[in-house]
Length: 115
Length: 109
Image 1: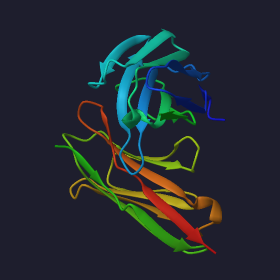
Image 2: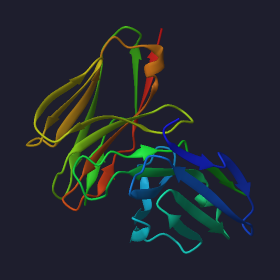
Image 3: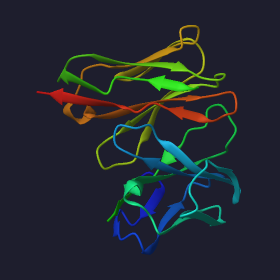
Image 4: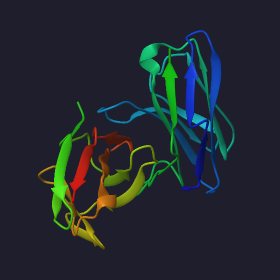
């Protein structure tokens, strides 16, 4: 256990479904992140929240919608996804955001398959 | 553009030493990170280098040369549990993390 918990661990959905990924951190961190991890590709930063405010949205399609109700919880709402969105979605947290030694603590990820 | 290069896959023998290289070209530099990721698990932090030189942590060491845009992760006395992917990431001048695609390390008995 890393202190960052993601649910569900596996999700299969059709292109017309609506689902949500959940992330919870018990580390008292101020920043939370969503990353997309595809095979043999670098991690792609999707969204960053700092003190519950979205500070970054890296040109992510609107079919992905983040929500951060408090500093411990982060959601990724999914709707009308495409097969190419199938990937591992990683949540991470860090004590602060814009510092040099900004160590990320990751969850184990949600493996998403879009049919 | 910004770029991180590391080998896709490496194979080594149990008990041996392996060096995983990472070269980078980024807009500024605020440190280099190594993470380990076992299959199906969360990436976990291994090391952070911001100054040139070697940082040692038990069986793992990480080296940085800022002038060459180069780092390596050195794993000694390899164990089967070291089979994992190793991710190199550089923090640029805007405190953005630029990631490599990872190196899958296979340890054979």
